[in-house]
Image (cartoon, rainbow, N blue to C red):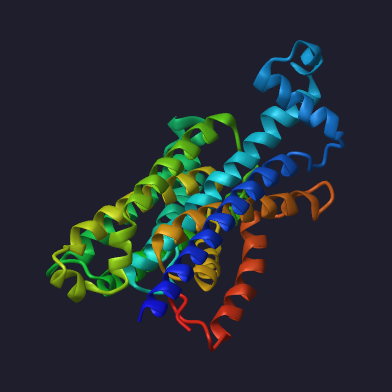
Length: 361
């Protein structure tokens, strides 16, 4: 008995050590990804030029004052770095929301858009592009109306799921499917009746996702929102673990998942809304990344959330790099590339007989 207890203690220490090592490794890889991704782009800049601009802006080194302005400065500081940091924030938000959504609805196929939030955002963007709704908001009208659409959809799903009793995971999924169908129908109706091919093309491009509109303003909004929401979810890892066991078990343990589920959904919707506002619709990140992490480290959300955050951020950074370099003098929509990568990966996970939701083998 003593030997068994001692062996369990050793195994626990080993697993903890592996987790810490991987977490540090992923954090280091994320930093490397940021520094490396800045060097890629259509403009042919040397490593010295790129890092000299960053060094001057961060530390105001007098010997590098030549990089305080000019074309090189604008490309690195105003275009590439904000884009990389926005990819970091959006990738982190989508992957963490995927983890949370899968716990909320107890469904391995859940992702940040499973509850119709993507369709709501698309409807908002469609109304802005096709009908000019929100034009008084200026250049950000499409993103802002998409954010509003995502938030309205989220609250509508919550309201519908709570009709006739408390919301459950099954009711949330069904409500999300219904709201998503309605939003998609209205979007298609608006596109049909306006019969504006140029605007329809713009809607299509927006729905494919892009980080080309990155700016320090958007980074200043998206990054703090993401970090705060991820921190909130990390403090709730025990309740997220409990959600995987179901409502009946949680009630016996004295925890009401109904209020928590609603609160988590609202927080996740805020993250998704801002992600849609900044980058359009990008799928599969919140679906595949959590599953990859679960295969390696199981279901404990204390480990799952930070690992998914780092891996999702790095993944989207490199996807954006690929989008910028695959086509010469052009750019592939990041939503298209992520789907090309994510769909086969998810199919592989589905056909793995040894893999089940939560990493069960």
